[in-house]
Every structure is written in structure tokens, then in C-alpha cells.
Image (cartoon, rainbow, N blue to C red; front, side, top):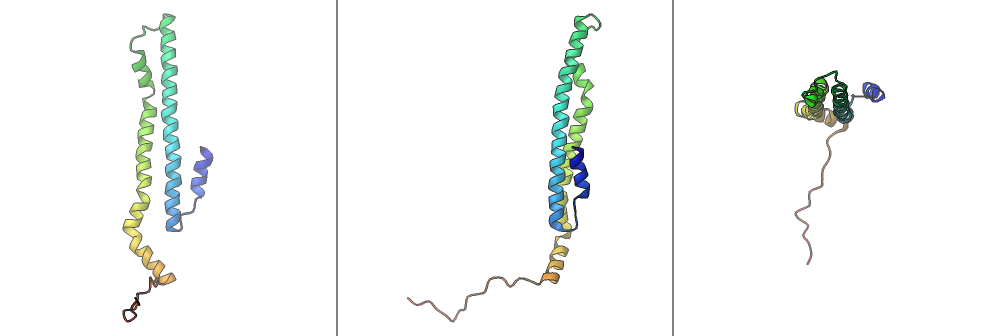
Length: 131
């Protein structure tokens, strides 16, 4: 995971296409991180529940609301997963916002640098088809 985050820092963003690819790569990284937190939370809930069950069996704990207590212990990972979901939505909106606010300027600069395309030639009206 750390290797991918380090790759994200080195990713170029000098061209509009690179901005789109950067957004896709960052969204993929955040999606993996969100799934990691969700999976880790499920695993930790099971372990906390087993710990509380064993404590009740040995007479150290009264044992009421074991599952609720295990869920409360891992609420931080739920919060992190929700925040990452919001971050993913933010990353997904970067390129469409770029196109919306800067698209005309980018197209104008491309036309100036490369020239306008000629498009399809129009058919001549004076030439008629023979039947």
C-alpha cells in the first residue's frame, strides 16, 4: 500500500489526460484502502467479541452486550472507511470539474498549437448521381 502511495506522488499531471489518469489511480488506491479498513474492522469485531466471551467464561467480566461493545471498540475504522468514501467522491469529481471550468481554454490552446481540424469534406451539389 505504501509503495502505491509513493507512486501516486511521482505521477505526472502536466497534461489533461494525465490528470484523468491520476484521478483514476488515486481513486483505485482509496478504494483499496476503504476495503482494507472495512475488512479489518470485521476481523477486529470478531476478535474483540471472542475476547469478551472468554473474559465472561473465566468470570472476569459480566458479559453483557458483548457484540455492541466490540462494535464500539472498532467505530474508528468505520469512521475512517466513511471518510475515505467521501475522499473517493472528491477525487472522482476532479477531472469533470477540470473539464467544466477549464475545458474551453484547453481546447483553445490545442487549436492554437495544432490548428483546427478540417472536418469532413462537403459533397458537391452540382455532381448528381447517375441512375
